[in-house]
Length: 160
Image 1: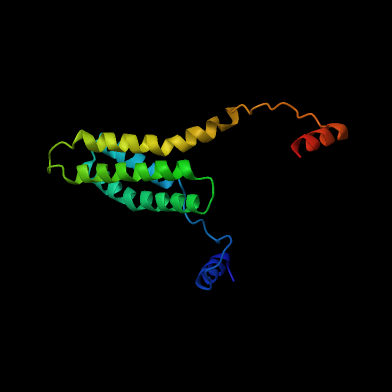
Image 2: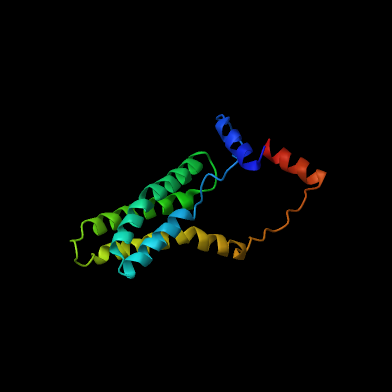
């Protein structure tokens, strides 16, 4: 049995379970890449491609935002990713709506371009925080002095 047949057979026999999946489920970078591609296509004058890429970004960005929010609700440290993902989703929807409502053959509203730029900035905030995280200086705490048994007895007698 070849590896391709084994992969197809294992996918057909899958059940819903916790644990690792045999294939990657998705990437947090996919909305960033698609939004970048839509912005580049729009600035290059390929308005039709920019429109379709912008429309494709919306469900991908929504999925990334939903995953980040659910991770936050489960108690995982993903609050920043959830907030920036939801903000980027709103900006991508605004950019897609502005690009869709542009007149045929006319210029696209600058709102579409700026919304995509702001969405890219929102997507890049967690990356910048992750890169700068090792630069955090931990607080130095003073070493606590251990109390001698006589001091403990004195404190307990005062409290009583």
